[in-house]
Length: 316
Image 1 (cartoon, rainbow, N blue to C red):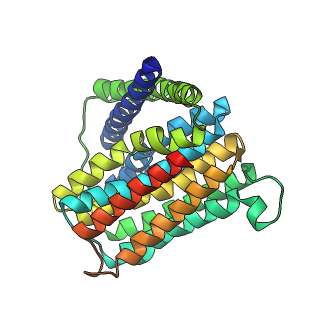
Image 2 (cartoon, rainbow, N blue to C red):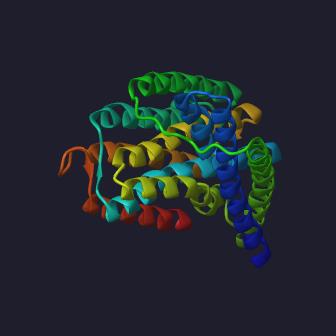
Image 3 (cartoon, rainbow, N blue to C red):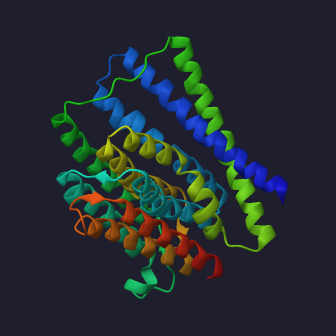
C-alpha cells in the first residue's frame, strides 16, 4: 500500500516538474525564434499548464481506466474553483474585470453543462448506456479551437504581454526533452499507483481520480493562482483557474474520449453535475456582497462546500 502511494506521489511530482521544464524549454525556444509573446502564451504556456491533466488522462485512456480519466478532470475542475480560488480568496480578495465575469465564467459554465449532457445519454435521450464517445470528444475539441480563436482575439487587444526567459539552445532543448520524459514517466507511475490504491481500498477509479489525482494535477494552477494573487494580479489568478477548467473539458476530456470512449457511471454524472454547480456558484458570487469580488467570506464558504462534497463522495 505504501509503495503504491509513493509511486502515485512520485508520479505527480514528476508530472508537475515535467510540465514546468517543458514550458520553460518550449517558451525559450519560441523566444529564440522570435515568436510573438501572445502566441507563446496562448500555445506553449496555456497548453503547458494543462499538461498534468492531459498526460494522466491519455495514459488512463490508453490503459482503459476510464473512471480515472473522467474523475481526474472533474476533480481538477472542482478543486480549481472551490479549493484553489476559495483558498486564495481567503488570503487576499480577488477583484475581477467585467469581461471575466460576463465571458470567461459563463463559457466555463457552458463547458461543464455540455460535458454533463453528453455524458448522461441515458438521462437525456433515453439510451441504455451513458458514454462520452468519439463523436462527443471531437465536438469538445472543436469547441476548444473556437475558444482558442476567441482567446487570441482578446489577447491581441491586450498589449500587456509577458516576456519569457530565453536560455541557450542546448539548455532549451535539454529542458524540453527532460520535461517530456518526466511527463511520460510521471503519467505511467501516477496511473499505476492510483489503480493499485483503488484496488487495495476497494474504491472506484473515479473517486481516486476526483481526490488524489485531481488535486495533484491541479498543483500548477494552485501555484500560479496563489502567486498571481499575492502579487496583485487578481484577474490573472482567477483567469488561470477558469481557463484551466475550459481547457480540461474541451481539450483534455475531448482528446481522451477521441482516443477511447469513456463510459459515464452514476458517480461520474454526480461529479459532472457538481462541476456545473460550482461554476454557477462562482458566477452568482460575483453579485453577492461586493460586486465582482471574491472575498474572504466567500473563500470560507467555497472551502467548506469543497470539504463537504469530498466527505459526501467518500461515503457515496
